[in-house]
Structures are given as C-alpha cells and as structure tokens.
Length: 397
Image 1 (tube, rainbow, N blue to C red):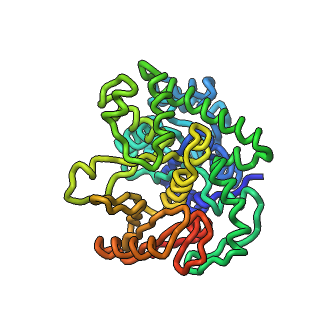
Image 2 (cartoon, helix red, strand yellow; image 1 turned 30 degrees about the vertical axis):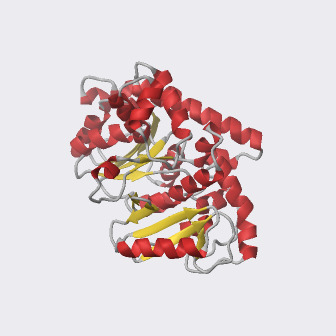
Image 3 (spheres, one colour; image 1 turned 45 degrees about the horizontal axis):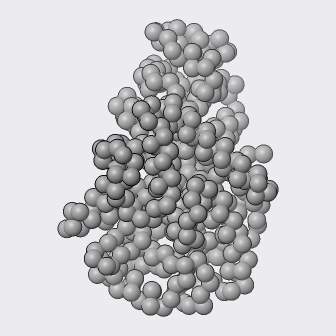
C-alpha cells in the first residue's frame, strides 16, 4: 500500500492541468512511489510509465527524429491522437529529454509527470525549454509528522501554539530519538531493526555515490568528493571554511565550490546563506546541513546537538526560504522567509532556558522580527519553549 505524502495533495491540484509536473529530490526519497500513486489514480487507459534507469527505455528517446520517438512510444499502445499521460522516472539520465518533452507538449494533448534527482540539470534545462509550461516541486525525506504516519502512530501532534506537558513530551521523545538517529528516508523508516536500517542507509548512500557522483558528476577524482562528504559530516551546522577544506583535500578553492554546489544540487546537502546585512564577509559564508539526519549520523559520530539542529532544519525547509543570522557574537540559527507574510526566527538548544527565550526575543526585535521561538531537544517546564514534534504543525501566516 502506498502511504500518501503531504506533497501528493499539492500536486493533485494540478494533475489535470496542461502544464507538465516535474518532481525533483534525492535518489530513493520516494519519487517513484509518487509517480506510481498518480499513475494508478489516472482513470484513462491512454497512459504510459517508463523508468529511465532501464537502458531499453532510454533508447526510446535516443533518436534523431521526434517521429521515431513517437513511433517508439506508440509501440506500447499509446495513442497520440487523444489526450494521454506520460510518466517518466529519473529524466536526468536522458540528456535530450527537455526538448523532446517540449515538442510533444506543444504538438499533442499530452500531460507529462516527470521526476529526477538532479536539480541543477532539471532547473537549468527545463527553465530554458519549458518556460511557462511546467510546475516544479521538490520532494524531501519525511518530516516528523510523515515519519509518525509511516510508523502508524495515530496520536495527534500537539499544536505549535500550546505548551507541551511532560507526559506528552515523554510519549514523543523516543520517537524523536529514532527520527534523529535514522532520519526520514522512507525505506529506512519502514525497516524494523537497527541492523536493517543501517544496511538500508548504507545502500542508499552507495547508490547515490555510484549513480550521482560517479556517473552524473564525472569528476576527475571521486575520492575527493567522498572525503569532502566525510569532512562536511563533522561540520554540519557550521559555516564552511572553503580555504581550509581546499588545504585539507589538496584541491583548489574553486574545485571545493564546484563540489559543494554539486552535492547541494543532487540533494545530499543544503547550503544556508546568512540573512542580508552590511557585513559582506559574513554574507558570503554559508552553513552546511545534510538533507537527512540519517546520513549525518551514519557518516559521523557528531554531537547530538548538531544532529538535532539538522533535524529542525529538515522540518523548517518546506515553510519557505531559510537563512541564518550572525553579527559579531549574536546569532540566530534559522530565519524563515515565506513566500508571503513576515519572517519567523528559530533558535535551537539542547535544553532551552528562560534566558535563551529573552535573548532570542531581543535580537529578533532588533531585526524587526516579531515571532521568535526557541526549540528545545530536552524537556523544559518553561512557557514558550517549543519542540521538534510541534514544527510540522506550525503554519506561517
């Protein structure tokens, strides 16, 4: 049975529109499951599902003429003379696909639902060839609410507005610890034992390295990318010192910049910029977070506070654009800038105190941010303290 993700509901609104739907996200985050969900929901028989990791399916599109591609698809029983639905998985593996999709989109009544795992390829090529013809969505590992759904936990999460009592905290605390340790990759969450979870995480990482870094990245020294990943795992939540990384790895700063962008664009890490200010040096420094705490924990024995901060970021990124703020010794971990509405700030602590709340509130006021919240890992009987398991219920207004 397919477990419905939150993104499914957003996409459902556009499933009958003309525009193509493009879903990006890390390998094995659930994109194929999403495609199968909507493929099964489409009542029309004039539909086709092709996995482009299959070389035979790739060959359908590796033709010199669009007519030949059309004939190849028709062999599967697809009828171009009436409305149809074409589902394509892992489209980054066929380099000429954007132009193919544009041609059939413009000349036939075809609804395309597409997935891929490399945002730099999809955003750049599709922005040129499919401008005004597509809706772009990003699928991430499970947030905490989805994690509970996959674990078949029926208890309702406390709302962000309410203060959490000790009993509620004690119920969610072991689930939160599991989420921090193993992350939100759907395959991992569904495994029962710690051994199975670790083997699955290792397999996902190996698959990512083989299919994205080695095949798609085509770097001269793949070992440098591997070593960079291991160094970043020790620095999650910290500002990236490109100069130091270049010295440690024995490559140029430009190479480090290129590798960081690749890891970000293939959804393995996220790079956070500082909120705009007058200090140019600070603005240029970015912080690194992993797309999922499971990889973070798997690759490094990092402090629990860093893992927790990474998990908070995972549950904030769907709310809007995320920044950090730093000026001299003053810092706020996350500032969320939604597409509409006012900015909201979040400070992350292992054990929050009343002084943390006051200090963060004052700094937020100086920045003109009305809503500032302190997120605590450990229970604190303090009014105003919030917890990771409340974040999925948070709504920006």
